[in-house]
Image (cartoon, rainbow, N blue to C red):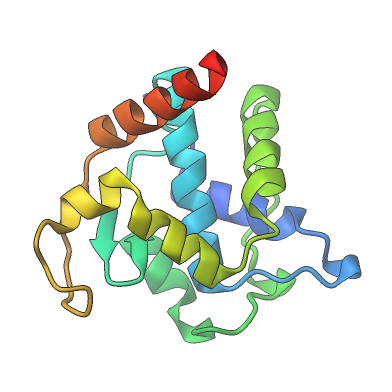
Length: 158
């Protein structure tokens, strides 16, 4: 059972970056942070943060509703004024989101795109489609959960 709407988690990321230090977040980067937040929530907590499924688009996993909301910004940084409201997030979930931001937040949008392209959930959802071909194929939450849980367990064994 998911606990949040997609926009609540997106707004948390937008409100949490260190803008005073010059940190920015583009639409592409936000999509990838959302993907990793959902993936690790599924792997570690056996439930997602939100219900909407990611689609395996050309530039990696995308939440269509988030794309609609932020498409006007294209590759530009999403401003603080784009936040709907400061969301109420449970402490355990906020800890996970902070971990995601700390682990992936310093990576460029392009690096995050390449990372998602190298991982099984996006690749399996794309199948044999050429990289430049549009796709609305769903990235299975079960696949995300299994893949990232296995990565966590392998990391734990080291």
